[in-house]
Image (cartoon, rainbow, N blue to C red; front, top):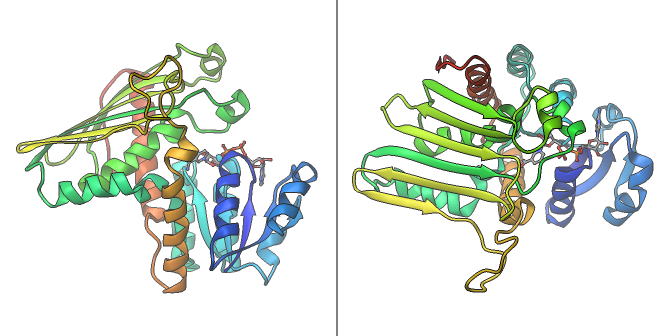
Length: 325
Ligand SMILES: NC(=O)c1ccc[n+]([C@@H]2O[C@H](COP(=O)([O-])OP(=O)(O)OC[C@H]3O[C@@H](n4cnc5c(N)ncnc54)[C@H](O)[C@@H]3O)[C@@H](O)[C@H]2O)c1
């Protein structure tokens, strides 16, 4: 399968390496306005390079696109993929404007193509084992889900400016994961946000520190604590608590030294989730090759954005918000 990669930034590099090493994939083209600075990388991957992402959609040699450009460009490229009949693996969030996302879903009904949304954490083996155990009844009736999602360091303000805000950009991973883990769509959210780390993030109208509480239709409750900074390293813990017990996914230690020395204790996200990113690409290629619908798909992108919009509104207005899909 010949891939065009649109946007070779932080996450684009993860996808590029995975495509280049996948036995059924070929990195055909890299499209990025910064192309002149990326020549060495493109040569390394044996890919051609263009500053004009639009051209990949007209190229009959390209079968599929990975959209890893800034969030504000995702919908335009998804629409171009539909119009040119190319399969698309689109980074999260699918978009930041729910009206545009819903219009894109309607276009995809008329011009169906395989689309996967890049919620790679669904493909993490530890989270998948947690889900299997919960679904198999290991903790009895689910009552609470507790999540910590803390990045080692804040993103650049340039990134923040086009990210859609922390709920749509970062916490959204766990809105999606909560739906996938429990099989339920939350019906109510109450969120708080503060800016305690980088005043520049506050000046952009965003938060770097948040707490979110969600209620599921079954009555089970979820709490997600997020931060744009974690001096101990990436924090991605989940605990599920039920009538018969409790299960946890812990952080991955950077080494096995006991007790840990001061400083970074946990491995960063690209390493913590490297298997998840590889599994994600595998799952996408398998779905496209077998003409089945990739999962998570556009409807998952829409639903997670609706939750993120509700959390954003709750934090801004200091009230609980009912969520309607
Ligand atoms: N799945 C994850 O865990 C994860 C992690 C980080 C980022 N992301 C998502 O991936 C996307 C990119 O994030 P990033 O951190 O790699 O950003 P980044 O800023 O590091 O990289 C973006 C790249 O896109 C290029 N670009 C800019 N405008 C473009 C355009 N119009 N068309 C094509 N390319 C363009 C830039 O030159 C840059 O190389 C965002 O939507 C973000 O939400 C997902």
